[in-house]
Length: 93
Image (cartoon, rainbow, N blue to C red):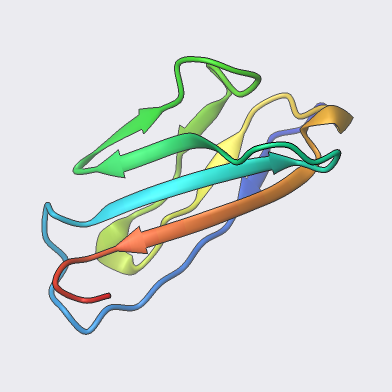
């Protein structure tokens, strides 16, 4: 609580990394409920502009190195839940 947390995500791809590569981070609260997209990356970072993570997520990854990690500022206990990192690099699935 209170200290920046790093959510690590690494990937490998059989295809060259291009601007078509996308990264999506989704979140579901520990208490249940629906999955929500909290971060999107395609060439540049698109952190969420709504919801509990608004203005608290930053991109710390480097797709050229197979890193799609993000950081969350000022975490609180209610942020607890399931975070899923999904990387797509067409045509590699």
